[in-house]
Length: 391
Image 1 (cartoon, helix red, strand yellow):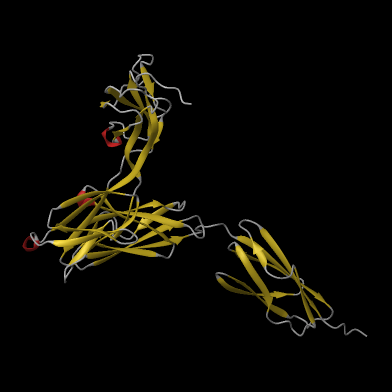
Image 2 (spheres, one colour):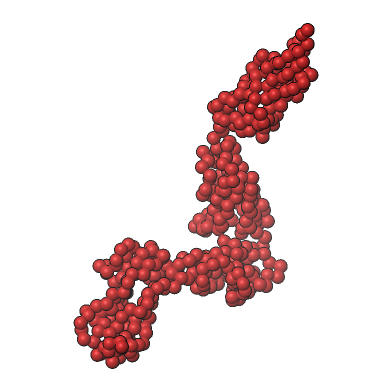
């Protein structure tokens, strides 16, 4: 049987955080004659329409949502053109909308509790017990077994980094035996980071097409990351993209001034842009921007080809040899007993004798393809076998 508590005793029943994210939606237009015209902007998750918001120029809308992927789209566009930033589809980052602690008056208490003061503390690492309280409040009188939840919004914390939160009750018991009661520490990844989404009505947007090229020996399969910013709007980030060498991406933009920065270059030695400085995008115009990343050019290797004869070859015969690789084919002539050297870029090659001058057999050592490595020498011997015509 549970022990009866004469009077009351408060304790912490549960601690936790509520993971949330927030959208800050703005609608605007530079067209004065359309400034008062309203549009219905639908906000959807992956499954269905969440809400439709009626907005006119300069209107703002804010809503807390679960982290995840969403879509904002004008439901009544008619013949107007809209630009969505960072895009019609976007993702809301996870943050903490609330740190909470549930307080309970023990079900074994014989009396309701009196109002009790509470405090909340914070530190980046370790225990926050020795810090100054971030906020204070009061737990109201609770009946035996009754719960009360203390809420704290991490956005109110001047230090917005991730860290540990801890709650404290002052004089939680009727008999005065406990001067204070501390909760455990609850870890918070940081407050909500609002995602700014802008819907802009433009008469005719422009388009920016960004392409990626490489020179030298670029790593295979590497992706290159880019950020587009609006320099005319405090370098606000417009969008992010990842492409491979030879690829491109495009983004529709309101007329204005923009910059594109490469944030992941694959380890390139340097890069160049086809447009230096700010990028001007005009209404209805398509602007093409190419990034070229320069990688080291590997030193060539050497292939030694030796020609040997068994039997009686035609006197003075010259044999044609082709060396084929990814960069094309090289042809060379070689005579019996001769060794020739060819400089080649690193890679795999096929060496073939094109005219055997009537040989009954041709042997290659080594057989098959041959690999050329930077600053190294590889060798191959080709032997032609002829009938021995001596009596």
